[in-house]
Every structure is written in structure tokens, then in C-alpha cells.
Image 1 (cartoon, rainbow, N blue to C red):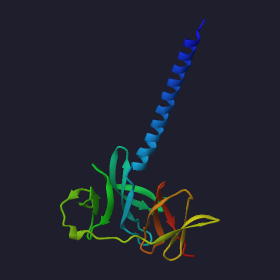
Image 2 (image 1 turned 30 degrees about the vertical axis):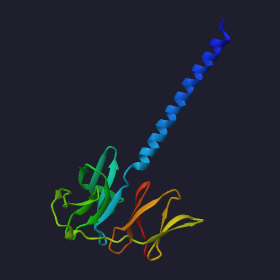
Image 3 (image 1 turned 180 degrees about the vertical axis):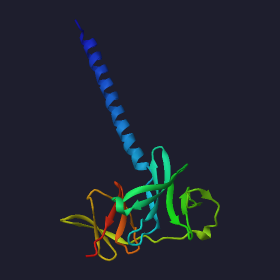
Image 4 (image 1 turned 60 degrees about the vertical axis):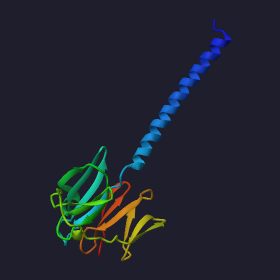
Length: 195
């Protein structure tokens, strides 16, 4: 038969092991959430806007744990806007900004310094005077009874999910009827009907 002291010791040990288990689970899941919050944000820049039926070309940076990937894609308009990889390279550190080159290629900001990558995404030496600056496209986010919308400069609207955070809005076509929207849920391609 168990004495009172043994019974209290047993309850104490059970409580200690349950507390340790709950603490470990809490730490594990909060640690994962914190790591996801600290992940670098994806970035996109349009290298070639499309004219009528040709395909736009973009360069996208994304962090796919544990790799930093810089990739060039052709967005195939005739194949449900499928992203066809043209070139992809792994970068050692996070990218904080992307800019176009005046001729061809892309400028990538890593650790506060600009680095040039040619049209094949190979790093090359190049003077910063070739870096061109792009202005962000102005847009506003509006919540209506129909949902959440991005309103572009001409008053055109693109629907996004209520829980989506819009990070970038970029025109993929010269006539600004094809748009790329980068959100916290990924990339969306949206067309604006002219009729």
C-alpha cells in the first residue's frame, strides 16, 4: 500500500513531467512561428513587360529554407500564366531590394550593398551608374461589403483575400492590363478587362 508521502511524490513527479512536456511543446511551436516571422520577404521586379501577346519576364527572390534563391521567370500568358524558369541561382545571404539595370540584368541589394547579376543571373562587376531606379506603383487597399480590393491608379480594382497583406503591385504589360500582385500568401496574376 502507498503511503501519503509516496502518493504526494508521485503526483509531484507527474506534475513536473506534464509541465516539462507542455513547456517543450509551447517552445517548439512558438519557436517555429518566430522563425517564420523572421524569414526574408520575397521580392519581384519586372524585367520585360509584355506587349499584347508576348510573355513578360520577371526576376524573383525567395527564401526556401535553408536557401536564398534568385530566379528569372517567363510568365506564359497562353498557358494559364505558368511561371517558366529561365535561370535560377542560389545566393548566400538574404536580398533586401531588387532594381533593373539600364541595359540588361538586375541589381540585387545584399547586406546593404548593390551587386550586379547579368541576364543569366551570373554575378559580374559593373558600375552603379547602370542601376536604374523604379518607382513603386501607387495603389490603395479598400474594404467593401464585396471583400478587400486593391485600387490602382486608374481606378481599376483587383480583388484580394481579406487576410492577405499586399507587398508589391507590378504591371506585367505595357498597357497595364496584366498585373502581378505579391502578397504574404504568394504571387497572383490579375488581368483587367478593358470592356
